[in-house]
Length: 156
Image (cartoon, rainbow, N blue to C red; front, side):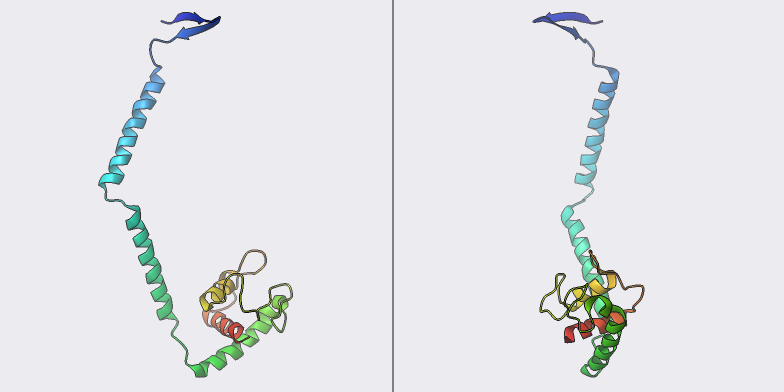
């Protein structure tokens, strides 16, 4: 079955047949590869199509968000700020200080924030929290309360 061959004092055993396991593995991988390639090439799958689908889903979610939160007239803005001030005193002043100049948390009277000062970014920070200290308030505050906090922070 096998024959010993010696090269430079090293003995080799020459196999005449490839072990059956390697042959089966070789052909299984080839068949699987052909099926995989055929599926992705012939099924019409495209990463561009997937990215377009994700973009459409994000745009649809943004439209739903915009429709769910109608813009408030200026008369309501003062009421929102007053509500936000009370909520800030109840929930935020412990970390950000009563004057929002910072204590444990950062100064909220600055012109720029680490995670952005835009209303959506502030609402995201309040709702879901941020790493290294900012806890999420989604379970404690309603959407309107979070919006009032955002309006108050913008008024600072």
